[in-house]
Image (cartoon, rainbow, N blue to C red; front, side, top):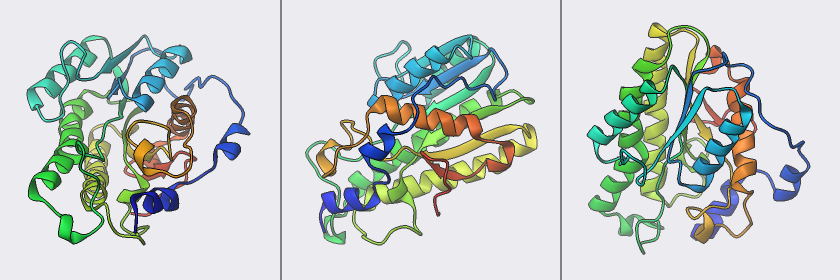
Length: 258
């Protein structure tokens, strides 16, 4: 088994098929006009494209982005920084859309595990801290700030390889397990969110194979451009309804097995 085999087998959609889709500005008309859209991980390939496209939509009064280089700095392993970022987003207005576009696959020069022989406690802990615990703490500080009425969404970028039901290749232990944990955290948060804000939505989204620094070393086929991935993801978000909260969807809006 190789990392490229896993990446290729879990990709969904070809660049040619994606290029045939209509290109247009996502207007996000399912959201009330105004308020704030916040992107966490805004310096990454997908995050920066999402920020640009949200601004282009003109739907929100403000689009705010957070990364390690923003002020205040944003660090998924530092809960105080997450709380400050959530407060800054809320200070900009009513928070209507939150996208958590963060994640880690390769740690330094160490490649994802191909076998249980490569399992390491520190690497596992780091993967869970970035891919599951950090986003969970963001939900802790942001979900209570979503409006009690009208459409509001928190979407966390997950990965199809985090699907237990879809796992036929094994390997990539830390990444798979931490993304599976993220999916469960999203599901739990969605159930609680529904009691407070019945029209609000909390979901996990799989962006597909995207040409970013995260995926570049592991895929044998070219991924789609981050801007195209952002367009698809925002299209899915625009179509989400309250009944979809707690789900796990790919870039086409198709439900991914747990």
